Image 1 (cartoon, rainbow, N blue to C red):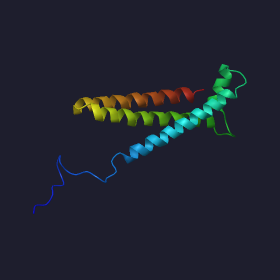
Image 2 (cartoon, rainbow, N blue to C red; image 1 turned 120 degrees about the vertical axis):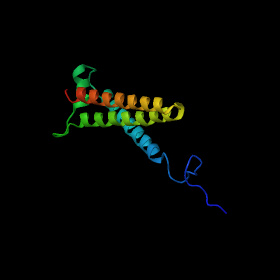
Image 3 (cartoon, rainbow, N blue to C red; image 1 turned 135 degrees about the vertical axis):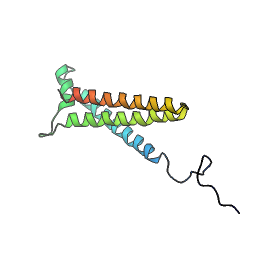
Image 4 (cartoon, rainbow, N blue to C red; image 1 turned 180 degrees about the horizontal axis):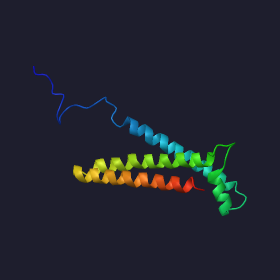
Length: 127
């Protein structure tokens, strides 16, 4: 009896938990975004008036010397970018078959997401 081939395109790939980490990260980032959405909603509902000054305070409030508003907003935005990366990357891997085109789309997606995070940080932390 010949030994089974454990290499090549017909190898059996089970039990290695492929994708489990991405699944867990997507759920964690979704929870972070949901909680932050609730925090924003409560903050908006508790605003005495919907003015620019109050809107800025929603994102820049401090607890002691810690800029909690900016930290929470940054955490939520990074979670959003990571969540988007996993989703878009999976779309590219599932539906774009030419490897070169898929790699190009993934690189462009990374550049776009990193650019948005940097732009967000520049705006939020300059307030």
